[in-house]
Length: 215
Image (cartoon, rainbow, N blue to C red; front, side):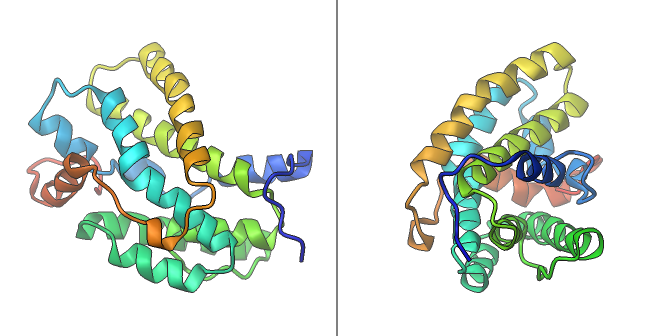
């Protein structure tokens, strides 16, 4: 099997990847806030764009990009174990594991693909390898979907507004590209993070009195 990394996706590949990362793909992404619900409850004036940029650069965004690359490079078993071990809280472990299991289940049922129940970024990287999708668009569009989903969560948690939310997503596109580029060549030894605020928020979220999101 030839493993493509730099190639431009064909129309068919692009449509498949767009479908996989669409908000309509039934992995339940809308029900997770990645700790943002707790963060906004504690600090209502939180600058959402900066918070998301930090998650992308220094937290789960960067680590997920590396895990996608490892899944694509036939290191799925090792990457899955390491990703689970590095989850900073029970809820974040749940978030990644349940989305990954749902993603794999739909690929088995609707696409006839043999994808194990890996955590979400590893499952995506593994599936991209199976389908011989070019790697770089997979990483970039995953990061964009990550940012878009959490911006949508912020809209439900704060008076953000549709236009302002789309401005944030547009600007975060550059951050997604930055993280995708910086993780080229990164391996599992490079997993780590410093998005402490997001990590602590994910730990405290389970004790939040009134909750909309699961994490």
